[in-house]
Each structure stands twice: as structure tokens, then as C-alpha cells.
Image (tube, rainbow over all chains, first blue to last red; front, side):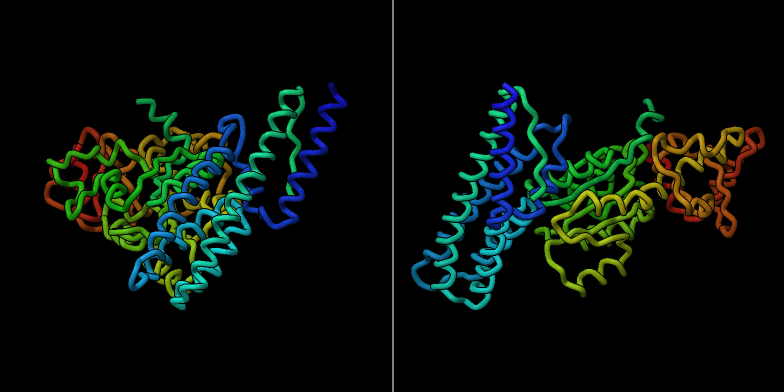
Length: 155
Length: 237
């Protein structure tokens, strides 16, 4: 049992560390984890779930705004990008936030192709992050089920 | 009403139009041992405080809870909100005689120096860049302590036999700037019976006629009010 726990914990540590190293997460994610405790044991999962819902909603808004036959309202696109930039920044979703920064610049420059490219990339990126985090949470569950404690990993 | 228990925790009113950000700031504040109320707009915030649009809380017909039941030690608000911005809310609070002494903190995801200085000039205590962190909230403790201690010093003055340190919130760290006690008054926030308020107000001379009426020889307390409007607020119980 202990050997299994130890192995899972090592797997978890490596996996989580890699998420930081590969730029999926930054230290804001570490800050989020600090807010989770016995009083709020699912805080991180709840926040992430809200974040991913935001992604779907805002990306939908951006896609619709960019899909206008005729003149595109770049300020409308920009407003959604601004919101996504805020929430990705608060959650520690480093790559998504970075893309939002670029996206915002394209909006301000009224660069249609740039915006469309960014939109596609953000869509791919948030989905990739979602999958990675699900894998991470699964490892946490396995550790707990095996009777162990989830180790602290602060990048 | 268990006043003692309620007073041992700071109560923060958090304002943000984003559900996501409200959830975050709420958890941050809870983690910092604060009681939190979150609202989604400046209007809702004013309502919560008891200030309706253009109606001060000295309106006896106002439906909102009397200010005395809602003690707020700090307001933390997002800057960019539709309708009433955080800056607008800040102004409204600072213009209100009842609540101008509540510290206000502004949050923003954008680092715009002009915006920051405008807010600080208007009386904001701090300006936080989002994402806000636990370490940022530690800066707020002194501001909230000021308000709390003023209220409690208030009671200490009224009951001179009490040890002042004893009335300080349990478990809260001592602050150094307790010297400014007794100069400003906040009768609204913790006093259920304002007419018993005793003020060690050194510089104030203003008295309204009705205050004189309430001077009672038996009570031996003075009810000097520096600002006549407070008189009206006190009656809106």
C-alpha cells in the first residue's frame, strides 16, 4: 500500500512540476492552492470549473463577434478577451493568459486574421489545459484512495 | 444580538461584477479570517450599506437595514464595473457622512497610473492589481483595525472601568497607531443607542438645538455631535 502511495505521489509531483515547467501554469495557481483547506476542500476544482465555463462562454462571444459579415466590432471582441485575460490570470493559466495579451493587441490593431488565429489557438490551449488538469486531479484522487496525502508541489 | 461575537471578526463588503472574481475575493478574505459579504454592483453595495440612490440613511422611510445592524469594516471593490464604477462607488462612500470613514480598497486588472492616483486622491486606502493575493490582504488589517478600534474605544470611553485592551478583538494583532482614538467618531457602526454616546471630541463646537435637549443631568453624558446630519442618521433606527 505504501509503495503504491509513494509511487503515485512521485508521479503526481513530476506531473504537476511539468505543468509549471511547460508554462501551462504559473505561480498564481500555487496561490490558489493556498486558499484550499478543510473549510473549502474543493476550492481549486470549483474555481477551475468556473474558469472553463468562462472560456466556453467568452470564446463563443469572440467567435460570434468575429463572424459578422460586414464590419467586425473589434471592441466587442476585445471586451471578451479582456475578461478572459482577467480570469486566466487569476487562475494561473499562463499560456491562455499569454494568448489573451496577443489577442488584445490584434483587437486594438483591428487585425482580423490575427484575431482569428488567436481565437483558434486559445480554443486549443484551454482544452489542452483542461485535460492536463483533469489528469492531475485524477492522480490526486488515486493518492487519496490509496490512503495517502497529496503532496505540496509549488513549481 | 451577540454583539461581542460579531465584533471579533472584520466584516468586508466585496464588490465585483464578475462571479469568478467574487468567488476568489470571498475565499481570500475568508482565509484572512474576515466575514465577507459579496455584491455584484456599486448599487447593491450602497443598498447594503443603507444608502439608496440619493437617499441618505437618515430617511426614516428607507427600507434597507439600519446602518447600525450592518457594520462594515472595509469595502473592497473592482474598478471596472458597468454602470457604477469602483471609482464612483468610492466617491459615494466618501461623500456620505455616515460611511466616509470606512476604508475603501480598489482592485483592477489594469495597471494605469493615472487611474491609481485618481483613486488614492479620492480617498482609497489601497489599490490592488489583480490577481489579488493573500499577502495583499495582510496590508488591509491595519486599516480595518482602525475602524474596529475606534468603535471599541468608543465603548471604552463610555465604560471607563473596562480595560481598553480587553475590548480589542480577540486574536487580532496589536496595532501601533492607536493614538488617534477618541478624535473621530463613528456612532453609526456599533452603537445601538446613539444617544448614550460620549465623545471626547476636542475641537468640535457645533451643537444642534435638539442635542441640547437631550443633555440629561442624570446621565451626565454629553452628546456633542460635530456634524448635524449624524443626528438625523441616529434616529433612523
